[in-house]
Length: 180
Image 1 (cartoon, rainbow, N blue to C red):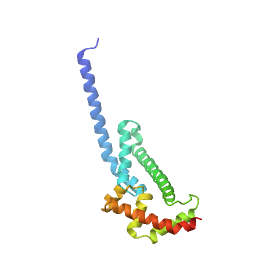
Image 2: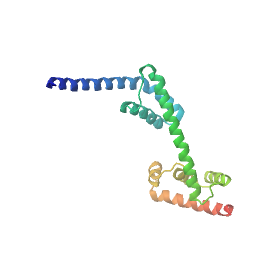
Image 3: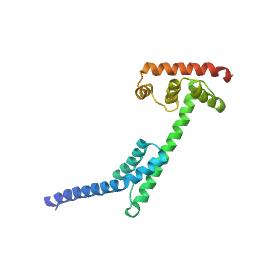
Image 4: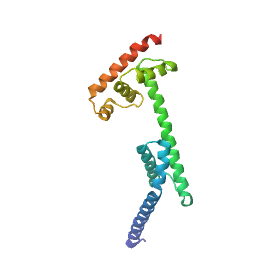
């Protein structure tokens, strides 16, 4: 038969284990965060993405989905950060590839014509107004919504729409003859 005192002891023991885990985790976080952040920042070149990568590693550690061996913590954590950064870089590349295809489709370009795509990108850089070119790139290359562009540049949604419509109209008229 289990006495009421033993269950209280188990709860207390469980609480103590959780407090110990939190204390160890906090110490690990404080001792390794700076090093992990620097490594992530070097690989990603973006402060926010670097912070997110390190946070993802610590979140997996806390959830217990990533086990941590005591004897090789520093190496293991840096390896986890490196791998997370490499995944982020791969996701970026895939996003750029998909957005390039979307951009080509938006102006009715065949995907296989890389010279034409290069010419379009050059046209956006050199011939469109800086604001229109920037908005076109933000929408098609960076996959930002009109609302996001509007907020970032401090302009109205209708102004964003106007720039995209004008930019696409100029691109279509310039490259329509080159397609055939």
